[in-house]
Image 1 (cartoon, rainbow, N blue to C red):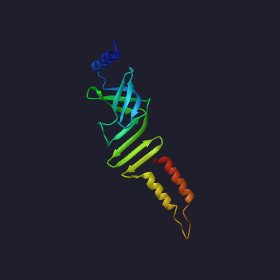
Image 2 (cartoon, one colour):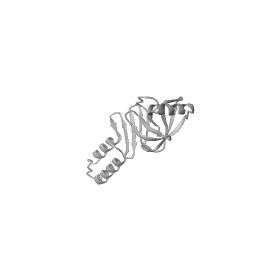
Image 3 (spheres, helix red, strand yellow):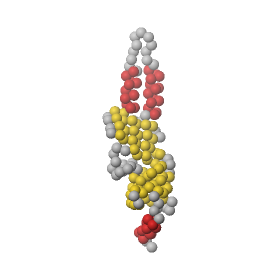
Image 4 (tube, helix red, strand yellow):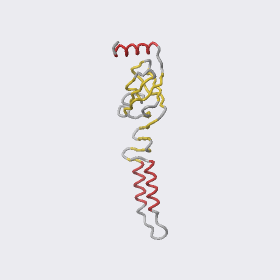
Length: 159
């Protein structure tokens, strides 16, 4: 029996006893297309499993699972050709887009943008301007402390 025949046989057996949701192991993540490839418990690999509600979704919440971890895969309708990730065990990163506001989170930190502005750049520009303040009478701004605060912010916020 050839590979095609084996695949057809497994697909027919799977359809006879449809599992609405099944666990699978993430093999790869395609962030451009917002899909994953995952292998089920029987060792069958499913490709192009959706991470968003619809294909080509631009304004969405996307949870990217970590490769090698477990996800729950569900069917849309009762069709094995249309699958989506319904739950993840380990999140690798997260993207949220609402209108012109974008939030990206991963192990390296956060990026928050609105239009052409991002929070890190605005805070860095503000600290740079504050460091320019010279007080004639009284105490001037502590440039060293402000520079340390800027470095701390840059550890949290990504470029």
